[in-house]
Image 1: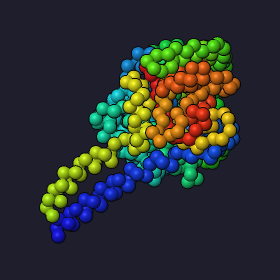
Image 2: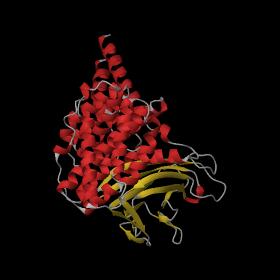
Image 3: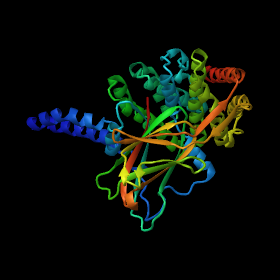
Length: 302
Length: 145
């Protein structure tokens, strides 16, 4: 009798565990009708949202750091940010984005074993917004500690954020989802601007300059919420202040034909179109200053 | 009864390991393994299409920002039960063709395509299955160092 009871309990635990994992993925597959687009026609705004609702900014920035040979530094991280002290959904969402960017930076440098406190803070913030169920804490923790499968860790971290974003938007909390995106972008921009001070590599300067267009579109995404309350007004003003520093940064384009080479069974295309950023040292310095100022104001626990 | 209990307890870690594996979509897991040792995951795009009757354009479109000074890898994986093979076409924001994983002249389909990106901007990424057949698949977008 006792043994049966134990088996039942164990089965129950196993079923619960299986159900938790089974709730993922399939809904993302869209079966197209004959000869139709799988993706419904999207408005301009929706296309912009599709592009800018991503949390990979810090991964791409960190990738560039690595290409430029920049070593890891924990001094850039928002370690002073205390997840437990945030009370309003506004701060929780914003900090979820900031810490997500830091997590991406740590992961790219494979500093995964030291990211546990950060992962715990992200979990706490997500739970505070009632979206903790989408942050796959246990698997992220396991993969972080194992250091064995970076791609799965990157996948799970980004996927958790994607699910949080989808859930917030589907449940009429798009303003919070926008805050997560803004937090992630500001932190990635902060990382780039801090690093370029020490490592003034052209490719880093270019990436910072190229944020001009990205920031313009980011502001257009959040603009519906800019008048919502004082906190949003302040945040939108911060973004506009950063954007103003880009006013005289110019981006031009040249054209060329791509070159294709077959290699190891795959195809390698070198694009010969190029984008060229024209930004003076003074303009860069102003962008570095305003970004640091805004980011540090945001993470100061009020 | 003790025998069954012992058996279950021995199997439990196996179940736990299985249920704890990530990601949960087997095709994504398989595809992640084929991106190469220097590839770092950035995004996955899952596609499922029915059979098309007409000679239409590539039927699935996604938009993505790609950045200068980055080498992107697009790894295409087609599910076993698909009739066609997953192929992609990338166009820039002015509809200029940047690349295709399908060389129509030689009828070669490349399992992955690397793009050494020199122009930051928004790109249109189109997918279909060969000859507009039905199928499901995933594309993993990674960065290569």
